[in-house]
Image (tube, rainbow, N blue to C red):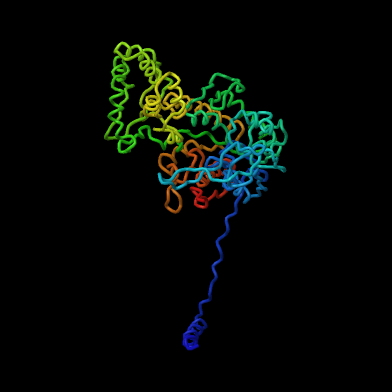
Length: 526
């Protein structure tokens, strides 16, 4: 109590001082709140169409948290400020991401960063996914982002057939909420009566070719997509016709919209993480083998010189990282010439034949080659198919094993490397697609997002945030991309959402605020 009484005189002095002060206390009014307006757009019923980038795919899967942090959900949160309506998402059943069909798993769980004895590594989360494709969702939906969909597939009847999923003829993500077995994605989307829509279409028309190391076919000139395989590049005219059909359907009721172009796929971590020269001479499993390998390839290198292709020689350094050996299908096949030259130099026919077979279209990788992210788990491992093939040719098991080491003695196969010729095919198609997107944006009076420039800038320079941090495209730690190396992390999606909002504000005279990327994680941590 003494301490309390001791304060009373000071309180009295304070009160007297306040009473004697003739200056009135002025309360400052709050600043005028910002009034957000929609401009000329009507956001009351927003529908999004596209592929995995629209769905919220992240960490190699679609899962609830990723869907909540999707690009369209971020846009819808802004539209809600100016009269936007409810935005319904066909949510997955859990945060694992795996799909089942009749109880059988048909897709894997999402990735997390696991800390192992060998260092951090993307690893699928454990557990059995509870999202069953045949359990149909009911109600109306606003997000028609379909992972894996190509442009022409969004218009394909039966793409949401549950029965077709088992046959590889339909998409399991769309099958969960399609209106009928013969429905189309765009038919169902257009039926929702959008007042505003977003469309980001076409990435998969080149991306699947790219992520599979160019192992598909460039279908430029083939106007019949029924003859395409999943990993092929879509003909630009097929893409143009498909996108026009999509936009025609979505604008039929007078809806405004926004469309984005296609980024350079080689700007993403899937192609920028694994170096072309990953073989470390200080690695105890590789370093001691270098003299042996160079000695083994000495005779073949002489043949390459004699055949006028010295650039194909194989040399491993004991003082610097060495490039992997790859198969380049664009090279002239010298299998027969190699075999003949070796036989003429006294090598037995069997060994000469195997050498020609293995290295007829081989070379060491260089700085112009892009190794895909998934190649990191294959390099310097035993290729069991090659091992079995060589034994089938009569090679003894010990020698077959020595000749079957991926990227070291057995050329790294096509699906693990994008060569310059394959990169050119991708870029030619992308350039044509983006010209179509720009032209149709003008034709249909849509806002246009330059996602290509944005993601190139993210890759080259990073994107600075308000807290002084920088989001980059560095795999796993940059904050821009998820652990699959292809799809953005939530923070990366937020940066994209702001680009969409900026384009919308510019086109329609709205003043939407965008989102704060710092409100979204750069990496899911369990």
